[in-house]
Image (cartoon, rainbow, N blue to C red; front, side, top):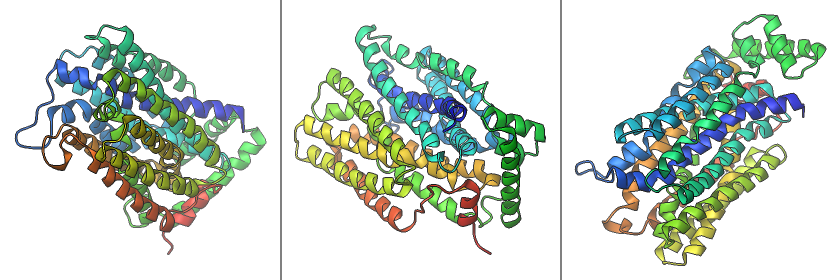
Length: 459
């Protein structure tokens, strides 16, 4: 694997680090904000709490916006410029959230960060997939997921250390504000990467600009000429067969595949566990200090098994990893639910939560961003990625909006015991296993242009 492409891919993938950090850092500020601003009240007679809508899920609604419309700047401005402005959004969000005087301004700055998260889940996987080859595309694009997981781990550790050594009244502000430092470093680094040569060709930029981009990626000049001809030819063939209308009916298969893999990703309950890990563990009987520390074990297991998924994705393929992950999901979620229902030890429950995290890291976590970035042709890839990531974040926001009500519910089967939620998620993972078996194609080792031919509607 060329070192230049590896280095550039890693730089672009750092958007994933900020994604992961921003997503999980709120877990440490959850309880302090709830107490400081008294946000845990229900809106009228609904099941929604102010805390769930404006504190915990506001960033996710920003993410929905960023993912649904992130394809526009990614297509028009380019992958590189979009990644640069994403860094600016992360920085503004971190600083603004840390200094927010009340709940509404806090929610606004969290929303801005969410826009950055959503847009990065569109732009970064596309950029990496377009500068890599068919043989290493899976590993390189999966580095985005690795950085998400690494960001999650660092956020858990950062929250624990800040919560331990900083004043209780201001610790949560430091937890959120510290993200500004890596956001600034990322923004400076991403300004130096080259534009995607495929995007330059798609937008009819000069031959010299495309050649310069390929040279920056370490492609020799003679090989670059051949590469340009190959991409142009493939793009011309795709354009003749498929018009640039995402919802024209010609892309129904990739649209369905992107929707389903994103839908099942969130119906596994992964964001529910990551966002509310300390509170879930407290419900199981762990002390608040212990639960925050135990959250670090979630981040460590996530990181370790993301390495496993990264190593296997171009060897076993995307589909095999989804099989492994689905089976692990079903067993672990069912057992977490049973542990809650039967009031088994909190240590046993933590073990099965860790099995759940490992299953996610090897399966859906490693596959989703790679798979969605592969299945759409060049001409509509930005908008197709927005469709898949938008689906992902809409369901993430809905789940994060609803689940605080169940954790705090005093009525029905949810009273003081969230076990039905985990049974529900386990049932959804059975459906994911069926999807993987009968609908999901294997994309390992196939060029982006060949995949466009295979998944496009035949005339």
